[in-house]
Image 1 (spheres, one colour):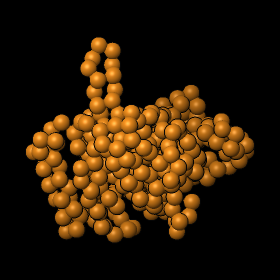
Image 2 (image 1 turned 60 degrees about the horizontal axis):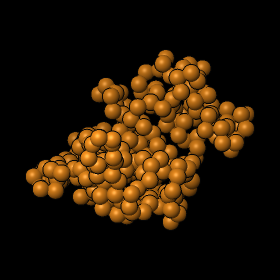
Image 3 (image 1 turned 90 degrees about the vertical axis):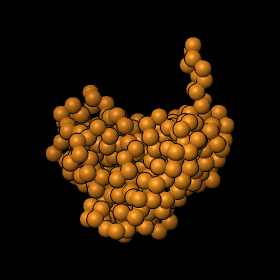
Length: 267
């Protein structure tokens, strides 16, 4: 992917998704949800637990289908999963019986996109870049939480996606590891300009990472506010002490406060 001509323009219009569990009333998780993810940018969706963020991620990845509305990437309808979109889940998706190397290689080899030799060469380059080369023969259970996350991002990049969708990927990590991973992903994004949709419920994480923060309302979820994050790149945690960061954080806090007070925001 060229940084000058980024791909991965995601558009959602009028999305609705309802879940029906046996013996329970149907629950509408998303309704009239509209989204426009600019290619080559890092967009963060922020909202409280249960507002439909993960459902939106699964829809954009093509793992589930909406009950109403449309989804597209670069003008093509999204009807199923594809290598142009990769979803990094909240919980680890590494196969515990495979080594780190085999996990990273798996996708392209399984699809027949690369030979084993080609995939091994590409995987070694990624593992070197991600600081995991000495752990290539280890199994996921032998890795720290941060190492697992890096291995999963390497696994995702092996597919050469146009869009990275990360569903609260650093949730559950200790504070120091989480901050290291935030800065690590920021460096990766600045190097590649890979279109990224990052989902979080953490305000500081959202503002630090984002080019734009989208605030999601309560169930049934929809985007209710958009906040531009005009902070300089390359970006480091020093920006957290800047007045610009504090102003944007305040704007986001006000949006969340107004959402909590509004009749729609309470679901």
